[in-house]
Length: 337
Image (tube, rainbow, N blue to C red; front, side, top):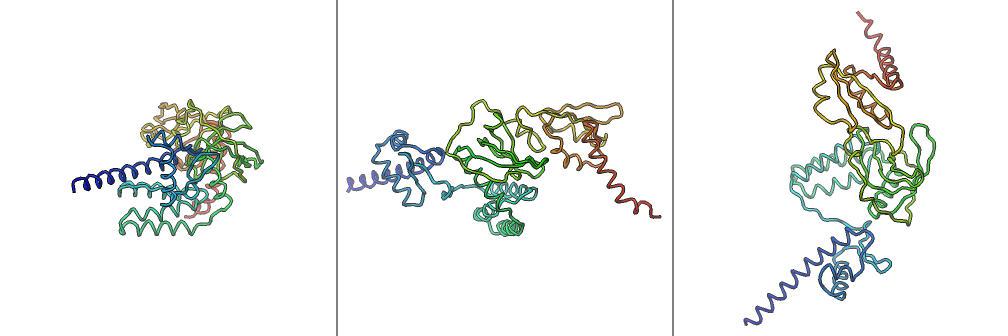
């Protein structure tokens, strides 16, 4: 009887260990987009290769999409469903982030809708009802299928570390440019755009590409690695859009804010290059150096008459023209008794 119980305990321990090993193998394959050989997995798990082959077969049996290429095992990410456990506060935080992104995005991402619908499963009915309503609301917005397809290709290239060929316009001139791009990461801008930051073989430097301006994409066979010394902080710290391309000419922008908003301007970091100065008339000047001052236009306009553009002249003239057109628009109303 004792021997029988011991055998049951040993079997239970073996099953438990195998369950832990299956979870570990799944995570290893998910994190290594290039795949791993059976001998590498066996060494990491401390078992022989035959055991790993059985484990891989079991993972396939329970629904993990295992693929094999060039003697390496990997997860087919197009069919893989990651399982994430989170508490209510974390789930609500993700909903708020997705809602904010969808509200300001220039182009709607259809995957936001499906992500919100799945998020409902982590929320009680009192909250999931609203999340589901918002998902349906976003779904009613028009979808640019070409944009969605290009974004999916870029994400696939980013995940698998494959280079991608991109055809896109500059947005301002409308000219079409070719890029052979290594995606380091994606970042949303405050102007509603989504940007791909990475290395461009054509310009031989770090480049920021607005995804909405990309016309066509092609996934390449060549892979890449993100340099260990790549500093992504400058691309994350700016409150406006994304900083310009490496080697691009920069423009100095000087803005003068009225005294009643000076405390708001001084209390946060708006840009890594910013310089602040208090003038004799108690106004505050904010000086920054950016790649394209057009990226600042929505933010500057949001301050209305509380800000004056001092430099550059082109930006000042742009805002002056806006003000003249607005004044002309309201002139009949002003003239009324």
